[in-house]
Image (cartoon, rainbow, N blue to C red; front, side, top):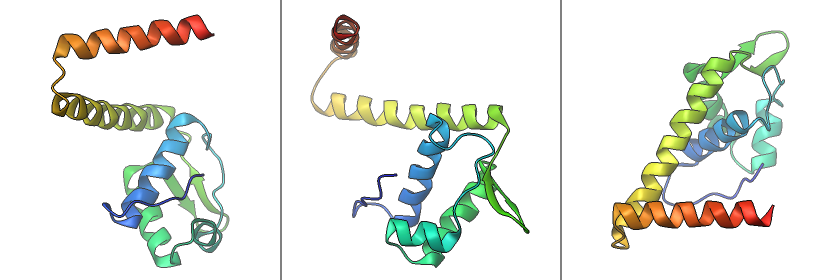
Length: 125
């Protein structure tokens, strides 16, 4: 996972986003056992308390569950994962549209740019 952090958001929020992204994209498939808090914290270069806070947030969201005897796991509830994926996609689209509006692009220009990029990508594959 990419553990480079920005200064504009709390680290635990960025940890939550990155793990949500990994779950939604399938990089962490349903039922996957997560590394321990200490191991994840060491890998990310953060304090274990910060990682614990992020994992607790993911538990509250239902994307991760804890089994006292064997650690934390990615939920096997595919509908919950799909809902998280949709919510993450909406955040990304909203940010993209805000940035494009700041550039002064109209709705029609944005749609044309996206359609043109999609055609380019299809031609490249």
